[in-house]
Length: 453
Image (cartoon, rainbow, N blue to C red; front, side):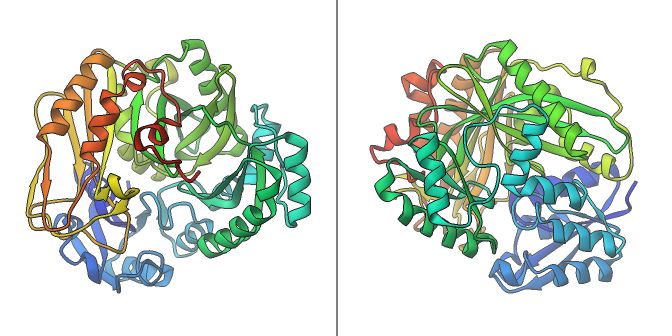
C-alpha cells in the first residue's frame, strides 16, 4: 500500500479522498491556495502545504508547486480528484517521472481517451455505436461545415480536448455555423490550450446515462451499473440517480458490456466512467470517457456498497480486484442532488458568501458529502459546488420522497448566499421527472429560458 497520499484538489472531493485514506491507515497531505487556507481539507489532513495564490493556474493547476509539495512532505502518491489536473496526461507523466504513484489511469490512456476524437475512433474500433460525425479534428470552418451539412442539423461542435461540460456549441442551422465554429475553437484554445474541434449529430431530447467501471492492472475489469444524469444546465449535472428510470434492463446491460469492451480496448486502469446518450428510439451512442472519479460516484457506492475511492487507492498500489462481476449486486434506488451556491433565478450565476448557517440534512439512509461548515466563506475563484445530498430507499418513489424531505431540512444562509435547493425541489415535483419520463431538456422547460447548450 502507498504510505502517504498528496491530494491535488480542494473542496468536497479532497475531503472525500482524505477520509478514504484515513480508513486505510494512509497518511495524507492537503494542498491549499491562499483563498482555501481555512478549508475543511486543511483541517482534516495530517499535513497541509500552501501552493500559491487563489487563481487556479498559480495553485491547483501549477504542476511544479504540487510536485514540490509532494517532495517536501515525503508523499509517495498523488490523488488528483476530479477537475483541475485529474485528466491531464502531462501531470500523470510528471508524477511517474518523479516516482510518485498517480492514482488514476496511465498517462498514455488518459491521452488517448482525453482527446475526444481519438477516443471516438478507438471506441468505434471496439464496436461502440457512435452518433454520426467526424472521427478526426476539423481544422477549417469550411471542412467542419461540410460535415455538418452531410449529417444534418442540429449538430454540436465540441472541443477535442474538452471536458466537464465545457467547450460545446449547438448549431441548429447552416447560417450560424461558421460563427459558432470560430467561437468554439477560440473558446477551446482559451479553456484547454487546444483549438481543435469536431462535429457530431445533436440529439435535442435524449437521456444522459453513464456506466461506472473499475479495472485493475492485472486484466480485471468490472462494471458497477448505470447512473442517469439527464438533469443538467449548461451540460453541468444537477441531479443523478440509479437505476436509470424507465430504461429496459437489456439496454442497460448492452451499454455496460460496451463499456467493459471499451475499457479493455483502451487498456484502462482505475475507476472510470463511460458516458452515453440514449435517444427517443432507445438507441444508445457513445459520448466520452471520464478518466477519473466522478462527482456522482456516491450514487454507485450507495447502490452497490463498494467504496470507489478505496478501490482507486488499492488498484494504484498494484492490487487486484477482490470481487468479480457476479459478486456485484445493486439494491434499491439512489438519488443525488448537487447543492451549488448559485442563483437559479439569475441563470444559475454563482452566489457565494460566508455561511452564517449551515445545517445539513440527516436521518435514515441520507448521505451528505460536503466541505462546508458554519462560518466558512465559499471561495469565489472555483467551482460553486457546496454539497452533494443523497438518499437511498427500496424504491424510486420512496427515495424521491426522502430527498424532498432532506432538501427541505437542508439549511444554508448568509449574506448574498443563494443555493440551488429551491430549484432542485421544483425538479423533484415536476411530473415528467417524478414519472421518469424526463430528458436533457428538463432544465430548459422549468426555467423558461433556453439552456446554452
